[in-house]
Image (cartoon, rainbow over all chains, first blue to last red; front, side):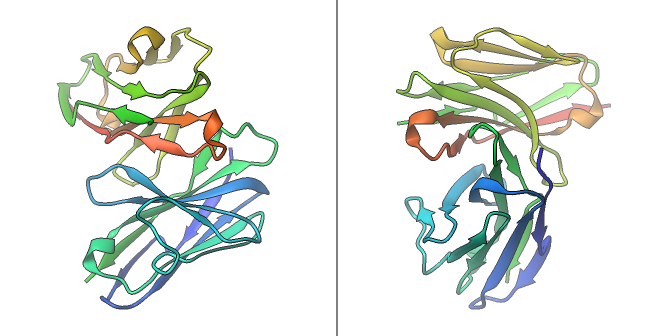
Length: 116
Length: 116
């Protein structure tokens, strides 16, 4: 398995502001992903965080709204920009460990965001 | 296109009853992976099982068992002698190897309530 931490664990933010969420892994990973889970909904993939290059975004998600960084093999950030109440969700990062099969994804504990 | 359907939105059972959670998937790939995750009220995703498309053997782990049937594109999950601690949202997910990124497609989840 992998030990994944996310900061903050939860936050309440005002409309129009931005929040950066950090994802830290205890070992090097090959792939990192960011998901969103809106209240009472399933998980939706936002993007794949690529080390040293721009993230790959899924349909419906854009870099201006959700800029992502991944400076190394153990760390990534997701920023939720210009927030609105519709951005209230749980944001989760997931990783594929180096040396493990690509189908072995581990999820972080999530960041619970409320936008007022 | 890939898709995962969990038709049961919510199920309530009395403790010690058996319960089966249904999962039906769609994919054009011959190589793919199926997963079940548990999300307790704390929000963290707990990995339960992974199955690849070439392994149709059913699996049992304690009170949990999984029935994978390619003929009906189903991967159902049964909890035997349910307990209150089993109360959670359960997600089924699919990952296709040819997508290159191994991203997961999640079903909408089934909320299981086990009553004492």
